[in-house]
Length: 541
Image 1 (cartoon, rainbow, N blue to C red):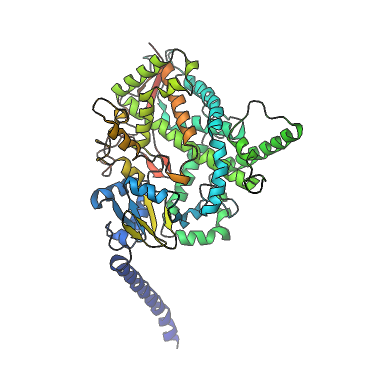
Image 2: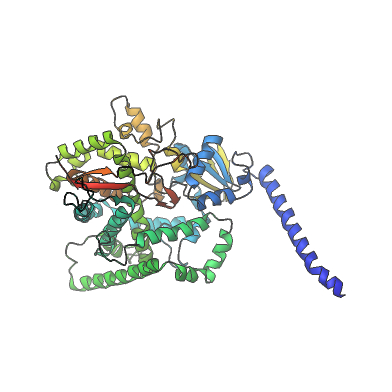
């Protein structure tokens, strides 16, 4: 009996292992040959496994890997056993249009901290999202963007002297230039300050020198989102989501970097103070002088059906977290990328500088209006940067609902995960000749660029997504970019640090990352990046 008992344990383990191998082999055979998506091309291992997608997500290269797949297999790629990726603009509009029989994929359940704290971004229910999005749009209406412009200009006018500090007084490089600034770090703090001001009515000046407990928050939040985003594409996400409401949420908050937890507490405290101020204003019949910011719009938003406040405090907290943490990354990443392209192309920088300095005769003239809109090369430079480095280069996943979906003659069954690959569309050589070259001229009619060429470009860029799930803050982001860059270019000369290579592609990188002329980012929903190193001085002409 003893020998049989001793044999039973290894025998049971062997049977279990063999059963697992047989089950996995049978599943792989089914996925390769008999699955409804088996007819679509893609990497072989991806036909039965999520590991290739997960690996490239972990490395921050998923957007480049998908571009490689589309280059090899065409416009439709099976990137995982249950996932199809599309790379043509018409199909993209069908997927993300309001009439598509899809919803945000079930994997988005990883983002909320708990079931009662779901932001508009993470909401998967289409009806709930429609209500929340309508309310959130109040914070980004034209009136709100105009109100925010003053804060953006004020912060830019404080940031400029900090960038040029030391130029011409012996504290720089001895040649009249400031010390080199890492524009990723500097822009992160600049935009974070703006959004704290817009949300909470106070700025913490993380862009200024000196000790500041919140200065590392943008980077720490980016690291935290990297961790979560990697789980989003993990083969184990189902297990992860099972344990989230069973204690994992609280554990993750405890394991978060101290700066992230401090930021969460900071949001809660500031929101509480703003709500108390709003109640006091309502009783007294007054408002906080000069304040008409994003949070005030959300606090005052009313549900169209009930007439009651559109957000409770938990929902406001989640929206504020989203706006200040994730929202800051979009604009700061574009600022860093645009500086990269300008300092690496003297012709573009000279042309843009001439346009700004001949259009405006004083810094006070640089504000939203016809003169700024007439700066076509500035607008084109911003559009080209958004094309070259779209925020969240990989797809925003959608899950096909019961009844299936027919798009572009493809009949897709329910529960299939689909998406439009923005990065690949933005680097389609048929639409954007020399797609890895920064060419603002492609956005301006004339000099060999036809109206049809410009229209094709405009119809193939989805930097802020599309449809009712598009970025609600795109108007604010465009205003920030135009005001910030115009005011800085008007007042300062700048150049790349001689010999600096931060942000460049290299020959030893993967296919798709070897262009020195392209600013390299690593996609973790937020864009991890470094550089460029830029020197400033007061304008000399």
